[in-house]
Image (cartoon, rainbow, N blue to C red; front, side, top):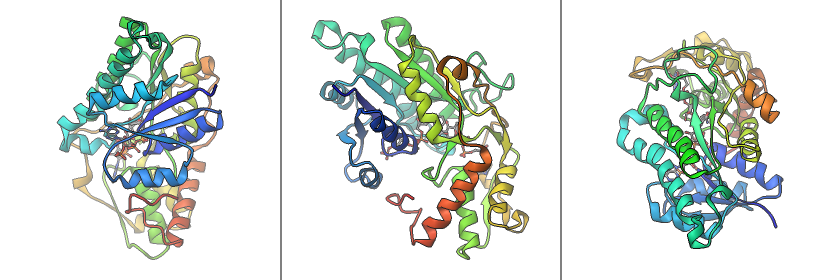
Length: 340
Ligand code: NDP
Ligand code: GDR
């Protein structure tokens, strides 16, 4: 019988790549989707017709219990979240509810549904993956960051992720659940939301190249991140749930670049001089910035055999090329239903 996976956040970047990867491995894939008429769900259905959709919301405990009861998954991947860091200052309570408390509700759904007394699977048999984030490191105490580096989150988003991270660890220790967190550094792709800096830059470059925009407004150009390719990172999520023991892993490339270097690479890909087009805008700076993040992915390499396959330069070129094509074909990235 095919293994069954339940993915929250199925309409997001990672949900789509993970679903593709699991379908390719022979899984039966179910995606939890919220909302009455979600345009991102229509987009996902167009791309991934084989994913079965079940309704639910990380704010709604009953809906999560129903989803686990109905799907009876072997593996649950909790990718759903408010994931845009600036939004977490504007809607801090909602971020705590979805990105933080949502983890508690999902873990409780698994615990309740898999209680042996109810004739379901013993809790050890549903494996749980939590999408933790390098934003938990925040103001870093050491570089590169490993599984043992301390947390000093710098946004309500980072704080909510830290709660979910510790809670996952606690359910593993309290109930013997196979519950793990991947501490993933920034990962990008042509399907990345247009609000995140990589996609904002590659879309901006494509618009300028095609004469659709005159400039590109950005915030802090000095921030440094470890950027990888989303398609590589979903492989790591899956590998973590196949391991012999439940453990947390840092996933990143180990290479750090500044936003300025990202901009330079993207403009260079279309033979334009970035300094003629980029305008810095103080209003796009954050109340508290994370200055730098860089992964040490040694544990994942040694224990899971995981390695990234796409370099920073290849990633930027892939995204610029995809956005040039999307715009040239009349696609509208501001429409949520539009995906390259
Ligand atoms: P996206 O922003 O692309 O996707 C977020 C998903 O969460 C969407 O499917 C969205 O669905 C869903 N969601 C939002 N609110 C709720 C809710 N109340 N109930 C159920 N689902 C909800 O994020 P990514 O795919 O980039 O990231 C996936 C996960 O990994 C997130 O948890 C993110 O925080 C985390 N992460 C991401 C990294 C990255 O670099 N991409 C790095 C580290 C961690 P809807 O269409 O309904 O809005
Ligand atoms: P991040 O990603 O906050 O790291 O979170 P984002 O791409 O939003 O920002 C990265 C860095 O770029 C700087 N920056 C800008 N960012 C945006 N969005 N827009 C701008 O105009 C701009 N100018 C400069 C930011 O200040 C920041 O330093 C992502 C999300 O996917 C999280 O969900 C995930 O947990 C982390 O990555 C790891």
